[in-house]
Length: 86
Picture (cartoon, rainbow, N blue to C red):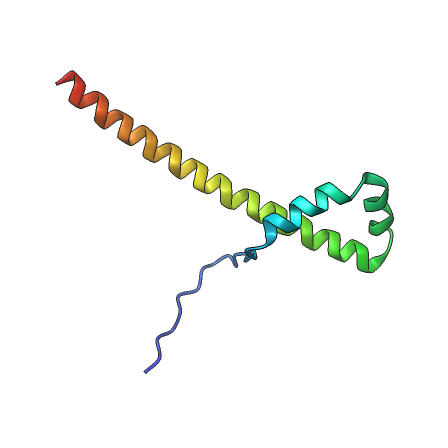
């Protein structure tokens, strides 16, 4: 008996584990002129758009983690302050 997976309403872009190393190497090796040359071809433009989506998805993922960590930190801080005031 197989279980059906619950699907979200918005498809999530899966970010590969090597996205960080890919982005670091891209920043280190590419200058704006070579990126413009790459964007001038159809295949290059498609690849740059894909990398841009990956970077945006990674940034959104880390922003969510950062927001969550700040909420947890604030909750723990409030708990510690309340025990000190009591």
